[in-house]
Length: 316
Image (cartoon, rainbow, N blue to C red; front, side, top):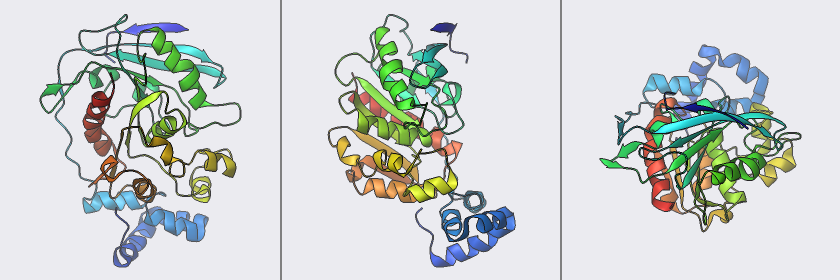
């Protein structure tokens, strides 16, 4: 393991009338190729925004407008970035560990594992915030309880096992033990899982697979597919097979979260809205919060402070 210390500078478903209008407009903004390539399934995915076209129209309509938070910080946090050789992923992976103000290496703190979205990595897992800023937030005029946070490179395989690449095993068997050696996330269920989009799905999956380890979970705009066919059509790298989808479908296995505090936040115009609705039907109603917004950085950023605050209430 090598380290590079840093001081911290680093919808609702559309109505038939609305769908008809958007179908016409989608063709006008490049949807023709999508519709030809995907057929009936392509039409369905465009109507829900999972394929390109829908969200651009939502932005034109103003359905994606979200008022971003004015961040306030209780002080200056710190962070350390580095790499380690992952047996589970069979490659070097990068990570960043962050401590809140007044804490640093040697501090004993709860741990948040923050999982990035598709195309992301440990350096940009959060939206609009660096890790050391996230743990230094003030929410509602009050500083967060002291917590650490770690990000890590998970690839683009939706945080579930693939041949020759198992990012979930990397998190559980390598990353978290490494952090616990630093005094972070020790004790009973003193680790929280958090993520955005693909990482939001991954956070829910991590909490379901390891309820003995994860004490609370917060998912922002989780990318929850409603079927293997949908996932394979849009993103062939999400699951290795239909059996892998079935084994890692967070809706099917949501009962594993019965003893875990859960917060899910998603926009009505998010392309993964059907999947999050399905999740809401198997979780307590208070666990899922729907509001105006799309699958955009503005929504992600606005939901980070309450998500971290939620984890802080249930850890430590």
